[in-house]
Length: 141
Image (cartoon, rainbow, N blue to C red; front, side):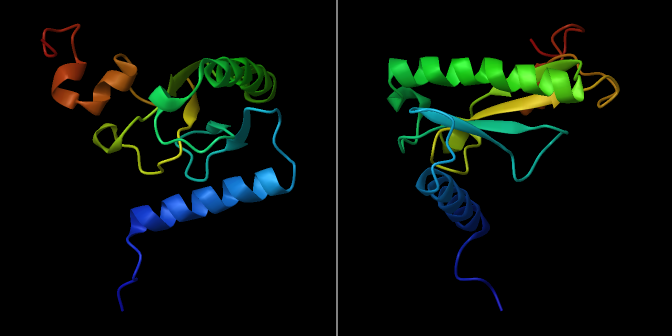
């Protein structure tokens, strides 16, 4: 029997309930934001930085909140560097449904990368549009 809630809505609801539990229990790291491990990690240590205030888009985040998110990024990176020693990072925000955002509470992904996790990691996030990613051999023009 099909579920009454589409998968994306379930993921969003689970995420928002998890965020609310963290705030209710007082486990958030600071006034504006907190960090947690991603529930669907793409690599070891994949983390999320989430502002406390519920807003859907990074464009709605105040300058103080943006600054707090970037400060948390530095803390998360330092922790991941010490614990997991990744070789690099992809850091990003999916802002809007057209950009792949499925949870409409803005959050920043911190994705540790490791040598050999992809045969050729060149292009990084450019691979979201594969036909444009390979600019170095003339394929992404």
